[in-house]
Image (tube, rainbow, N blue to C red; front, side, top):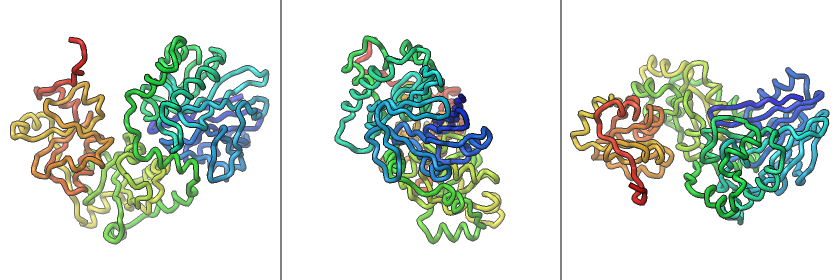
Length: 468
């Protein structure tokens, strides 16, 4: 028996490869299928099953394409209804892989169809659970991401409580918990950086598994403090439920090299978004007019899904030479499948062709200290929790998570200074402001980390009801 976790840091997502006696199963695969095909080939196995723990919201799973390429059956838990062929499993149904077995435990709560898969060895001993978004390390799945149904968030939270108590917690302490996500995912509130743990340790350390916790307490703790889900979550969930385009065709279309003239012609003739994936501090000095910068070396895919509202948006790519396929792959993971080509030769080719360019003013934190005396406004694009911990006195919270719906807050007669923690998110925000026609701002190089090294006055949010 072999278990391999394939962890993707950009999405904080864990997929799993399980094999025994020449047969294999994949759990919650990412969109690109080749890694799983390569694993099966290298180990001399045939992929028999593809298990999905639920309709994922934060990425598009690779189950449909992988099933098409391998002939494997797609397994979902009870109540799952899809636009393609699946095996809708019954609660406690058993599937064999070589000499081992996987038992379906229906664990609704995160979503109605959510299921946990219990792995047993050839002696029938419980070895591990693949818990999807039902149980994380240090947390549980949020109950507000289900595709529209008649259940309320509190209804689902109550179901999650029952699932944990009745299906998971009775299992032996030595069982290993393999979740679908770790720290950094928006599918929970406070996940650990660890990507697996023993169930026994989780019973001791996970707030949601406290033995003396009432159902009402659980519902309150799980539902309080939930941030608004990124706008692409519902769209990805629906793609996973209904089906999607073939990954090979999407990659072939997106990997079309375009000369500067062809690139410019497409921009002028279509509703095109130019997505520049270079490093923020490289982008700022020179870029194609109205480009949006989301650096490939940061949290690329989740930020694409957060700030690009139309998942069917036509996209042209500017990338470092040789990284075009990486960009396309990561776009496809969150369902942005309408890339129609990339700039051949990268931005250098655009410059050599003497095409028009723009730039964004970027100033040091020390220069900000001098310019704040002229009544400028600091725009803090970090998350609310970061802002509350410490921020520049008088700064306006303008979280990147919700920038698209809040552009009406920007006054074109006010000078703004945009920052995040280190400079990645602030350049995304700056590029969006620029693309929307705002030019009355400067980005702060090094972000809040640089500001903290200056004498710029800072403060923290203090709850009015907190004890003195």
